[in-house]
Image 1 (cartoon, helix red, strand yellow):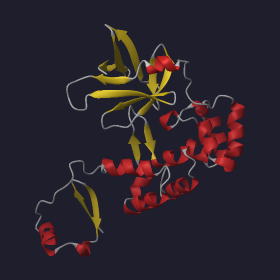
Image 2 (cartoon, rainbow, N blue to C red):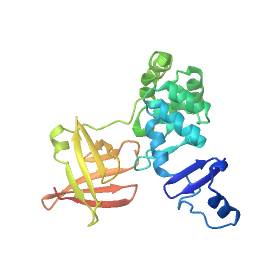
Image 3 (cartoon, helix red, strand yellow):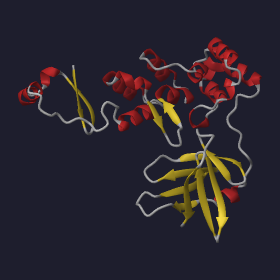
Image 4 (cartoon, rainbow, N blue to C red):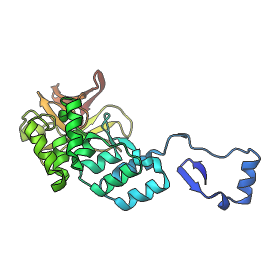
Length: 262
């Protein structure tokens, strides 16, 4: 097989299907268009892989058959909230996709072992790494939640983690629904068409989204300061000033300041 790269992503075709003119161009060392990001994989394809790994086994197989390395694909959903394809399957309890990905080269983790009910593996990992049960997974989803997602097959792991007593997710500080509502709106930090952030409230969860990006849930840590799901070191703070509400993001130093306009 010969692999060609276009600006729209990767294209794999059999050498026998090359047109005579294109084959001649290759033989004569003429310039062949190559993606600007080559040799990295196309971001849209990587993002799709991680997205479908939550539940679309047919598409997962299609993508991995075409590009085997996608079994290890990872995507940053924002603020360094990295999730790989196996992690996606693990936190939703999709055993079929998880087992397929591991068989095709995905790297097993404590989280995948927990969801798959591999009690001995989980015990040995935590014994070798005390406190590992407190490390949050993608989107700040706890190891305990992965065990619950694993269903009956993971019940022994769930019992073990519950007995440890501290395998839950990051703690959140109390905040009233009225106070959360008072923080919603559009925060502007520039004049460009995407230089704004929407803060919204849905079912008691405050979310942060920049234009064209994915919404990130916010977890309150106290005094109107939050961290995005999956990024416990980041702080998003809301402060009142001159009759308006300001938003600042620290990661860990100040990286952005915005003012609510609506």
